[in-house]
Amino acid sequence: MEINKNKKLHFTGIGGIGMCGLAEYFLRQGYKVSGSDITASFITKRLEELGAEIFIGHSENNINSEVGFIIYTSAVKKDNPEIKKAEELCIKFLKRAEVLGEVVNDKFLIAVAGTHGKTSTTAMIGKLLLDAGLDPTIFVGGNVSVLGGAASRIGNSGFAVVEADEYDRSFLTLKPDIAVILNIDADHLDIYKDLDDIKNTFKEFCELSKDNASVVYCGDDNNVRSFINNIKRNKISYGFANNNSLSIENIFSNGKLSFDIKNSENTYKDISLSVIGRHNILNASACFAVSKLLNIDFDIFKKSISSFTTVDRRLQLKYDKEITVFDDYAHHPVELEFSLNALKEAYKGRKIIAVFQPHLFSRTRDFYNEFAEKLSIADEVVLLDIYPAREKPIENVTSELIYNELFNSGTDTKYYSDKKEVLNHLNENTEDNSVVVFIGAGDITLLCDEFIKNLTSIKN
Image 1 (cartoon, rainbow, N blue to C red):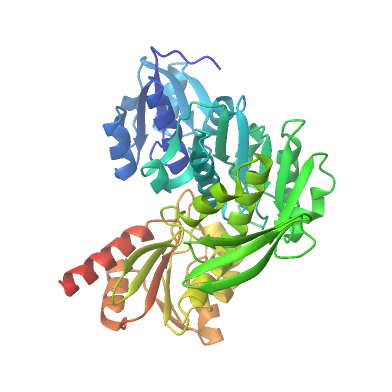
Image 2 (cartoon, helix red, strand yellow):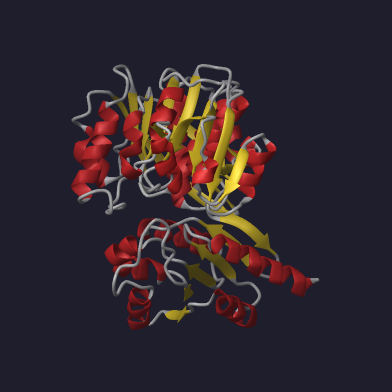
């Protein structure tokens, strides 16, 4: 892929977390970059400060003969005015996943895949390589403090760590040296036919790895185990079960989580985490498997993983005074279960209030029963309307589907269409010592910030 540095790269949807990392990469490589998004954000502001030309709103006026390539994702529709204008001008199109593959496939590539947890685990592994002095290139689907709040990093070595996104089968452009499979669940059923289709695509991802590659996988996951023996690669399993190559033992929780990892030769003791949740023990164990493949000293691993905090919006602690407030990106029932159980375990005896914004009409239609089941782990649930993202409404699919299931189960549940009413309810009814978690992949994070702003002004 030859990209002329004298021609501009235009990113349609540049504010997306996957797109902004690539845009930053090319900016730092000296390319001219422009991009558009529907709304301004801290991401677009950051890119503008780095030298990108940013347009708010998609318009044909954003595209001219100076543009050499349009970089886009599957979320961009064919009737987008920028796409139509680029077609008129015979400008070349590149899919974001294809560009990412071109950037990283010639490196020693560690690609982290899974329905849940890949952003946090990619960040963990990226931090580990940094702490080990391996100077990696990193692309992650979140803003990471160790990267200065960025979603990417340009390294000077031959190593790369990349979040491998299964949406629209994007990860099939990657050819890893180490493929990490965290878990597989039914999701993105607007793209995949069913769970079998998803499993077959993950199998293909493993088979596309380089010939001498290794596959690190969670041996506790039935869907991963269903095909993993057919993968002709070196394989390392990890998990809580003692039949894994790396088995997790002696979990202890007293403010901080700690645990051991045992293999056939040794027990690696007293691994501690600063983040909560058994799912993060699994993520850290995947990171440990990578450390073994790269011959990174155990003391370096222990120090690196113990100082890992979190990725923005991944069960992120935002406020911790009279009330504790978390912001969480969870948008699948399994992710809700991970997050709410983590909070229940870490804050025993305290009231857990889950403020949930469902993401996508199709996902709500497919999983409303499961959403209600997992939300009932909380002591109180506050529901918002569905965040549509890329979808148009589906008849009779609203948050009321989840509300009815919760109400029938006896869970204390409120449903508000107006976000101001949500804030009013929380401001008037949240008792001291409660834990409030704002959950969803939409704009609920803004509501979280507004709630914290209210708490701060009341406190002051």
